[in-house]
Image 1: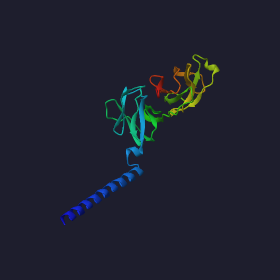
Image 2: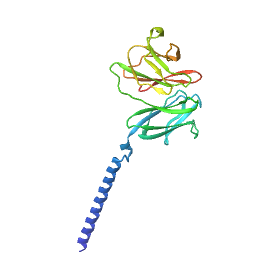
Image 3: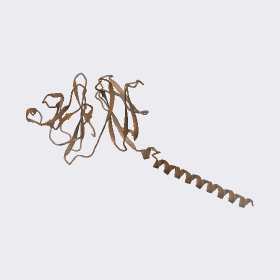
Image 4: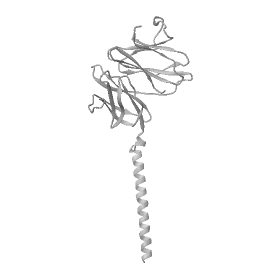
Length: 240
């Protein structure tokens, strides 16, 4: 009887273990179906760009994750991974816990973003985000886009010419880019220098600094304009 009882007890214990394992598996499947894990919700990549003229440097925090530390005006952080979905961001003066600007991003899985701190039309710190679409350009080409965040100028245009070409004989590649807007990427031929000049829309008046580019094929660049004691032009190396 004792051996039989032992066997019965062991069999009961084994059934209990299989039941618990089956229940845990079922719970795991249900959690995955409901987005209950970081893996199922996905991962996004986020970097920070500081275009504020004051304070001198900022920290950018995302739901407890430090995205950028001591990021100076005109500087760009590397990418950090965040869980996809609703992602809050806060900008703070370097070393402070006081929030000066905030932004809520709905981040998609496997998408890259640039979160930018800048001055809005009311001259107050604000934040926004752009999608960094690294879809490969055609063979032999590279890509450039414009990020317009200078509240003190109106719509802008982009001229892309041979170096020192007379703009009187040129037409813009991009016209009427408004404040707080990022264009899509435009493709250009690699292997020779081109000059990129931003003007007030509808005019040939260049604002900011002219940039001469000759990157390798497959490279992505962003040109951001912002105010820092006058119009500043910031060249951003997006992917190398």
